[in-house]
Each structure stands twice: as structure tokens, then as C-alpha cells.
Length: 114
Image (tube, rainbow, N blue to C red; front, side, top):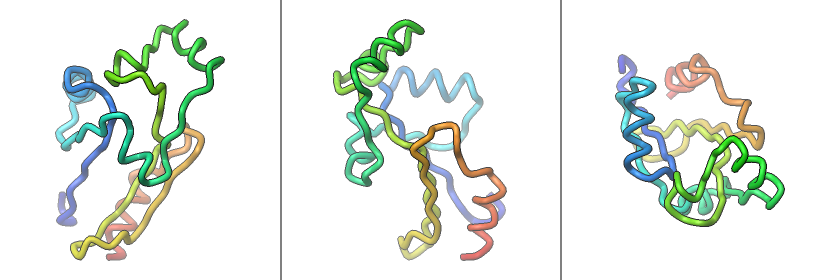
């Protein structure tokens, strides 16, 4: 990237599904597996779907335990961190509503500020 930055994603899905996602969307960034959403939990960004939503997901079918390889039915809130070269978080965004995510322009603005 021109700004000297590197993008990395964290996702709880099993490696074979991460590979499919990379290929389907033509992603070149690293995607690190957050098994069990443990890192998301450590950051306070993990939540467990209640039973009624688990039933809804299974009707799609969207079998999170199969995709993630563990039975917790957990998801991570969308979050974005911009970390400077000293390892300090320079900007952060997260949303409880997964449909609200920062625009790429916001990330570029944050990078320009550091």
C-alpha cells in the first residue's frame, strides 16, 4: 500500500472456508484465524447468538459450528484498528450492528494522520 500500511483480517472460520473466502472475493491480505473468536472475546467484541437466532441461521442454512469448527455459536462485532509502527492504536471503529462498517476512505484518512 502506498501509505506503507498492511491490512490483516481476523476471522473464526476453519482454514478451508477462509481459503474459499479469499478466492471468492479475490483477497490478497492475510486472514488470520481467530479460533473460537477468542481474540475477539479478549477485545470485548465477541457475542454468542441466542437460541432463536441460531434457529434462524440454520434455516438459511448458515451453520456457524460447522464453519468455525467449534460449537459456541459466537460472532465477532465488525471492528477496524489502525496501529502505528510503535504498536499503539491510532484509530479504532467497531459496531454492534454488522451492517455498519467504516468506509475505506476513513481508514485512509486515519493512516494519513499517523
